Structures are given as C-alpha cells and as structure tokens.
Image (cartoon, rainbow, N blue to C red; front, side, top):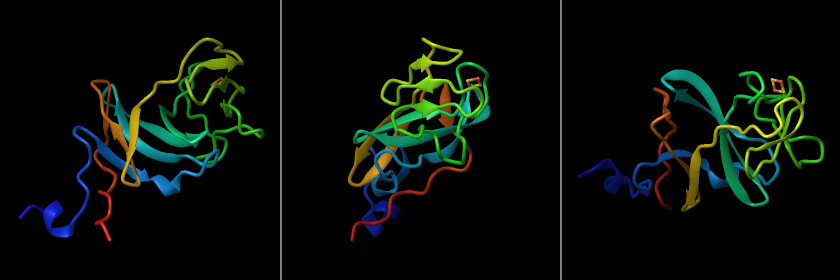
Length: 143
Ligand code: FES
C-alpha cells in the first residue's frame, strides 16, 4: 500500500510541491523561505500572505541580484504595503511583484505559481525554477 494511503495524507495537486501549512503565513506577516534551483543554480524563494492571498517570488532583487529581506523572512515595509529591498530600498507591489519605487521601477520579481489546498500551500516548479535537493516535507496526515 502506498505510504500516502497508509497515513491518510492528502496528495499534493499534480505537479505541485508542498511548501508550508497555510496557517504558517499570517496576513502581512513573515514569509516562508525555501531553497530552489533557478536556472539550475541554488537560489532562495519566499512565500508570504498579502491581503489574504499567498504570493511567491524568488528572493532576488531586480536591481542587483541579491536577497532582499531585511531580517530572515521579513520583506514588507513598515506600513506592510510593499515588499522592500533591504539593499537600496526598491519597493515592489506584493500582489504583482512589480517594482514601483527605487532604482528598478517597472522591473518585476520572478514569480512562482502557488496554490492553497486543504490547509497547505503548494508551489509549482517550472522549466526555470526547480525544487532544491532538500524538499519541503509532505503535509501531515488527516486527523
Ligand atoms: S539591490 Fe535591491 S534596490 Fe538595489
């Protein structure tokens, strides 16, 4: 019997990778950080909840390819309105990833597709962005 059937775990959507529990992402709160392969090179990505919806981007500024969080997992500005790059202050709209202030106005963060299902957040690898070797753990079994 497959392990998922034995434990009662919810199977992820086709092609998806379990990322974190939905409850781990407070609206306007800290992001969930995870490792990916971007064009086959190690990189970090993050998922955060903004106005109720989970958004997910590669943690790489469009200005200079550096990680943006000012503390690990902290991306939003003081007003919780924009993703802010800690290096030179670029401001990105959380919903679209578009830069609306700072040195790279009009550029975009690299987005990852995400969904929520049965209390879990999933992301969908693409040709350009693949899971790193250490994957997120599978969702827990149903109670
Ligand atoms: S590196 Fe992000 S604003 Fe310059």
